[in-house]
Image (cartoon, rainbow over all chains, first blue to last red; front, side, top):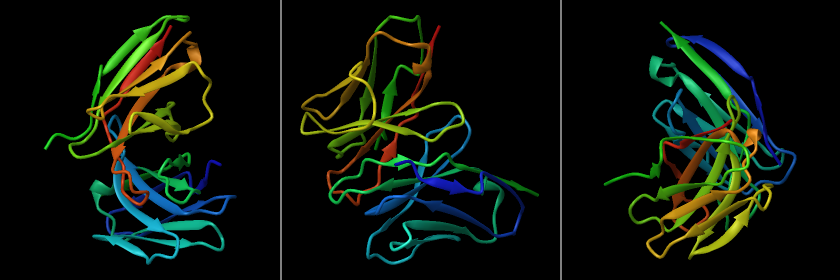
Length: 111
Length: 113
């Protein structure tokens, strides 16, 4: 049930864009995106629901392709503060929010 | 408004011992989920409590048990500790509705020697 994320790691210069992908072998009800900095708790970014619209949080947006059970996180004009490990959490049950997380994508933004 | 709090911050135990971890949810939240995060891995869902009952459970053995109190706080108990139980244990709280975000606490780092 664990989703697969790609890439595993990416290094960006400030201002560059990046895409992080998350795919599941099961039909999904929702996809949740989190960012975790070293030694800290995961911080919520956004939720995408089945049948819902593409979401945006500042310069970070995400999409959800229900037919392919895939979600993508788009980081535009990256900032140093975007560095961290990004996790997608998936839920395959209606009316539930217990999440199955991928192995994460480590994003490093350098000046 | 206090967020999710967990105690203790760090814990060292030996194999075979038992441990209890505690979590206080964000104010107004009624659902508590527990996750285990091994080094370099994503969080793995252990179980979720709502209305003092276990509502969902992940693929963890019965050595892992929990409890939710009337004030929505929660405990995670692990019996007969194994070396492989060493991990960061995260508590997340949310409202009962499925599309609500989960707020994570800082975690408890458990080391089993």
